[in-house]
Image (cartoon, rainbow, N blue to C red):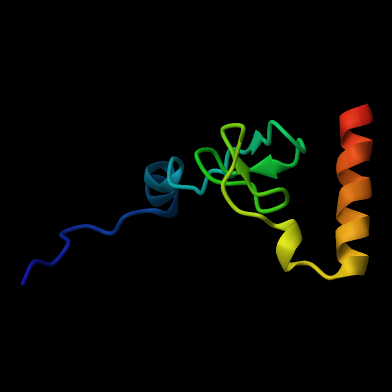
Length: 79
């Protein structure tokens, strides 16, 4: 079994680990509702991908949720 010959100091261990870190996820904005989404994925807010409707999100909502979602989409279109 391999055993290290010398102790690695904290600074040398830290210098090696300096480049090991988690990068934040890069987000794109949806073309229709301009919500942040992961690239190459369908928007969970409006159900569109590349300008085409993939999933009818509004059909699964209740009447109250549907009204709120439609008003939010209209506000983003005005901006």
